[in-house]
Length: 592
Image (cartoon, rainbow, N blue to C red):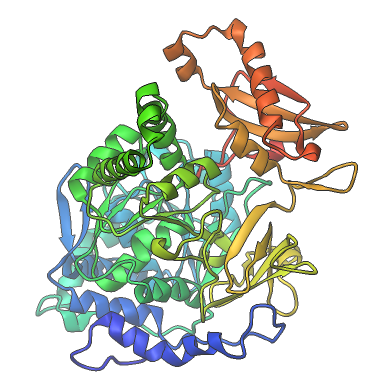
């Protein structure tokens, strides 16, 4: 384990130790190279956390929004140590799997961090998964313990999880169920406090925070994807995979000592986990946990109170704000007349940007959008008004980050630049800068494989270590990624043209009274499935009988915006919303 020089903050030390590694990205490690990749990170993830907890001992670490319940880094480390003793007394060993399911909360974060610093493997489960799928994940992962919220546990059947020895409540820290007839877990809880005080008889001090060394390629997490193309697979992420994301966050100063973070994305998802929890905890950020559903009104209130210095969000949030709040303003005839005058147009844009920044708390460096594609019209407008946002690209299999560019250097319609020194990328086409092909990546962040699924692993990881992402796109000579759509959803037209339905849907979703859409091939026709925006219809007093005519008008307008081979032949209306994954992406495979 590496020791840190004195009088250096964590960010400086980590940067110093990996300077040589990052420099390699400018030399022989080119994007299209087929060299066998070798590990470059020299830092140890668990050592980073031990140093952070000691260096930030008295600073606030976690606050639960709405309760004011706050713990310092010192108290947080103490709770982790207490959980380590619990694991020891229950017979949990390094390498054992511990499942975790519940809303963002202090106990959720403690359980996650205690598990990986103990050397066990955490299995975070999105609370939106239905009980049947969640129970399957617990069993498939071979988890020996389950930490779960009380309201979720009501829908589980303990008898159908034979490997789980103990179930603990995330709400009360009590034992909910256990396999042992001697009630061992209950007895352990009775003496846990006394055992902790005996072990740390002089009190729990900064020097007591020491975590064991585990090999960088040790599996730290099995994250079951919430994919749009079928049942989820268990992505095995190693300590080094997580460390690659954390080191990038430190190097980029996404978070820093004393910065503020509002964690409202699910921490069980790789995106929120890496940059709303793992990176902030590595540098001394104050994390406020927003455990409720992120309804726009409540979320905006929390943002105005917490005033985060960095905001992570999914496209849906920005798209709703754009449609519900910004479009009505810029569509007014009086505003349109003013915007026809260049000087006034810029002033109006500046005013809108200022109000939007204020609504998000007013003190953030940038908003990072990820998890799904951002609607091009929304992206173009935000870029035009100079709103500080950037779009990144990642997937659970990379824990999650592949590419990112800070907002000042962000290129519209791109997904940022491939992470220098950590990741490489290439496109399987004759001209990767011009002709779309499948995007492939390799590097520090790429998973070890799918748990107990060698066939699925072999389907996406080739012999040279390249991960085939399933996304189609191009890559500029500078390493900037431009995504066209998913390989599996691409439609080949009768004249051999590639049709990316996501691009057509983005245009259709901006049409009046369209809440969401899906473009599919039915026979030899392109058909758009549309779920209407009933809220907008009610506001405009538009009756359901008018919908067919309105949709036909939208179809004709849409076809003026698309290429001849992308023309939509029919629009079919849906009475109900599309079924979605927990991160709000449509499960496309259900509607093909």
